[in-house]
Structure formats: structure tokens, C-alpha cells
Figure 1 (cartoon, rainbow, N blue to C red):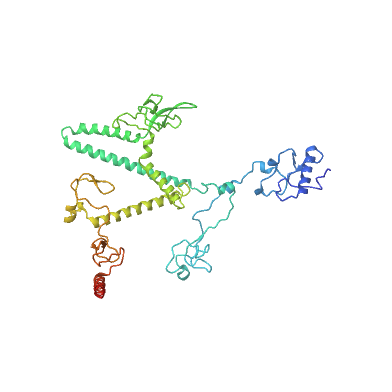
Figure 2 (cartoon, helix red, strand yellow; figure 1 turned 90 degrees about the vertical axis):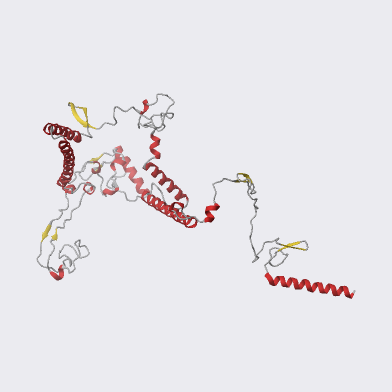
Length: 456
């Protein structure tokens, strides 16, 4: 089945949804065009499109909104130079009014904006009521930038404004050179006053030295080196990577089993001379930089972020570095605050010997520098051999309102509490009333026993 282009015509750039039947018809039409049975597609300029061009080349992107077959998206587009270089006329004014006009800004009196969008300082009494100091109308422009114009970061930049930056730096450099020159002249005048007899010759020699110092100061950070170019040789100013007088890292230790040297990064992490005297060593490997300066602070910041994340805080060093750093700063402040509070409580309880306060006699006589070592049972192993043996149990612990401990009372082969004369352990203390009740009960029992014996 062969279809004509008149019966079925479909754009290659169309991205509309096609049914299975329409897709099949399109594929058959493309095969017929490749075989030469059907004429090729024609673009908007009347040129035929080669049917053997791949689809990823012939189909236009969706954002171009192509409605007809074409290959213009593959050709270089000519952009309008005005659409890239145009920019707003900064500070341009169009009209200066003498009195307030209806519909103008109530604050400044300009017709190009309202009081909500006014950027002038709010007046105590606006121009609507005073009709004085009416602001001129701004120039309002409306133009559309192309793709390059919207993304040109230098669009609208005034090149002449950079001259102010250059002037500022030149003035700073001149002031610095003048200050150095004045300092050296003051030093020369001081030396000349000391040598009054030879003042003229010394002053001339000092002027020559001053000129030499100025030249050294100007060329301090520059190293002259011959740099060959395409047209021959020329003298250029470049900065050396290192001083040629320094010994390279890989020549510090020629042993093959010494520290590894990476020639690509010019780094040596381990110490090439570990047995050398540290006072005479000037290079101890690149790893020493990891535990010094801000590298150590950065490592502590990472560790704090990891620990905070493990404890449930939503913090990540790479995703939110500012948040992690702020949390670390707050953590250090809170930690220092807690340490100060702990120190104050200890000083308040035990005093501060460094402050010069008088130490109490109990603490002064109760402390000692002798070292005594005990075992788990409380016995002395070494140290103070003549110490009094102490119990390993808690002493003088009163429970249930008792004033004596269990075992302080003994009667009839029984232990009890002396304060209430009870024999039941962990009982509640009854005090003097309990003692009287116990004596009364015992006397009644005694009288009953005597009466029983007399009856018998």
C-alpha cells in the first residue's frame, strides 16, 4: 500500500500525540520517500528535504514550536545585535513638572510610579499637598532581549567606571611610596644631625641609597625571566613556582623505601626524615599541615556535623555548610558557658586558693599529700599503714524515723532499736510512747504469771 503526500502530510517537527494507525502511516510514507516512490518533503523556503537524514537531525526541538518541516534549526541563526547590546538608560528623565498632577505619586510627584513603588525617602508632607520639589518623570523603556542578551552578565556595564577603580589603586600606591620615602628621609635626617661635620657627603650618599631602595620596593614581587615567544625572545615578568635554591622534596631522602613523592601534585605526605632532630628539621611532610591552623578547625567542624547527624539533627556539612558552622559556633559557646558555670559552682563550694581567700580550718587540716591505696574491700594496700580500719558498709543511716541503727539494743538474746526498744527490723519508730507501752505490757504479763502461780 502506497500513500501519496497529498493524502497524508505530517510535519517531522510535530510533537503532537499520534495514534498507532497514524504512526504506521507515517512510517510507510517515510519508507516510500526513501525508495523514491513519493516526492520528498519541502520546507517553508521551497527546498526539498533529504529523506535519508536521520530523525534526530531533521526533527526540531519542542521549544521552537515548529509547525512545518524545516532544517532551519540546524542552520546558524542571525541574531539581532541591538537585542543583545541594548540596555536601560540609567538616570534618564523625560519631563520636569512645576506642580502636582492628578494621578502622580503622592510622595514625590512623579507620574511614572505610585506611592507604593516610590524609592525616595518618605516626606513628612508629600508633594500632593505641598506642590514643591516635584521629582522628574523617569524614562520607561520596554524591550525584549534575546537568549544571549538575557544571559550576558556584562550587558549594560559602563567601561568608563573602571577608571575610578584604577585611580583609587594608583592613589593608594602613591601614598604608600610617599610614606616609605618620608620614613627613610626622617631616618637620614636623624643620621645627618649626628654627623654634622660630614653632613653634605653623607646626605648625597644617602640619597643614592634611597633611590636604590625605591627601585627594590617597586620590583619586590617580580622575578625577571626570559620567556620565548613565537616571534623570538622577549623579557617578561613571571612568578616562579619556588625558589631554585631550595632542595626538592624528592631529594631529601634518596632511599627507595622512604616517604612516597607524588610528582603530579608535588606532594609528600609522610616525613622523609623521621629520625632527624626536630629542631633541625625544616620539612616534616605535608600531613603536618592537616593538624595545624584552620585545617584542624575544619576537621573539628566535620566531626561535630557527623555526631550531630547521628544524634538526629538535620545538618550536613556539604549540603548546608553555613548551617553546620553556625551550629558548631553555638555548640562551642554553650560548652564554654557550661564549663564556666561548673567552675563557679566548684569555687563557690570549695573556694579558690588562687584568689587569696582564707581556707577553712577543716579543709586545711583535712587535706594531705600522702597517697594511700585501697583494695575493693576498703583495706589499705600501701601508704598509710597505721590508719584506722573503716567498715565497707554505710554508717549512721537512720530509716523509718529511728534515731539509732538496728543492733543498738540487746535483750533476751534479741537485737533491736534502742530508741524505741523494738525487735522488729525495718519497723516504724514509736519513740518514748512505744517504750512505755512495752514496759506496761511486760508488767501486766508479769502480774498475770504471779497470779497464776499463786492460784496453783
